Length: 306
Image 1 (tube, rainbow, N blue to C red):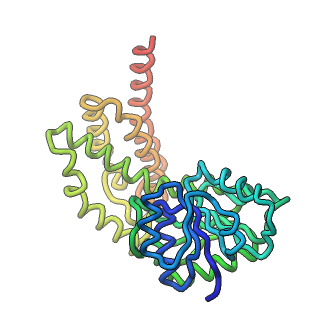
Image 2 (cartoon, rainbow, N blue to C red):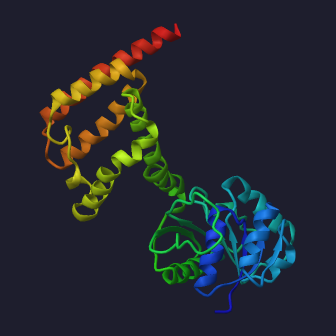
Image 3 (cartoon, rainbow, N blue to C red):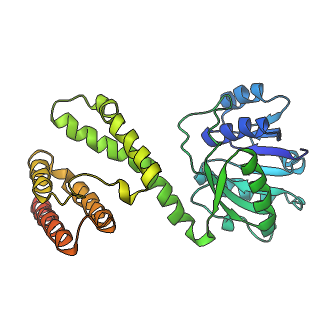
């Protein structure tokens, strides 16, 4: 494999890319990052490599594939800098790893639309990688872009033993919101759970330890039976008395969580209806119950404001 790779941005995603691309046979010739300490450490593990604190014209010229894996807020700046070099970019593939931004960021006057791509790993990266953590293996990537760039990305993804979905350019923000809901909101969900546990005098730090078995078994059930069929609990069994007691207890102890519980409750009612555990009469009764608390919370909030 003779493709020469230039990695711009060696943070959480970029560092993982550097080691994993290297291990599947891609030659990481150039790396740029603003963090000198980080750049130095990563460069020590990817030898030989040329590194720089800034984007280098000769690095672009000497590369076949240029990955831009900076934070989203810096991608436009990177692209503008490359544009300013005023060099021949024909034959080069440009890949951004952003989940939110599309290839519309690349000006068509400078970049061949067939050779630009958004290749977003549907994975969470919570730290810098200093070795191959295999975070990019056996996952999905969301890809969008030109035909030539897509073919290159599919080759990379295949070598990582991963899969991909094609994301319409005008749906990137919608796609990314689904990723945020699946990962970031899971953290939020458990944090809210810890707030409830804390109100009972149980250490918030123990929340994951306590709920890990039920979380893992829920995921196992989803893997085996699918999302809808895996739903259990009071909403699924039309236990309106328990739901009412939940709402009353939360309203008494943690009233700020009423909107949270009712919103997720409404969405859970939809799932239970799809499972055919609830009929329309059941759905109406549960929604009416939750609506009472929503209206009451609204009145309390407005009273505080006024």
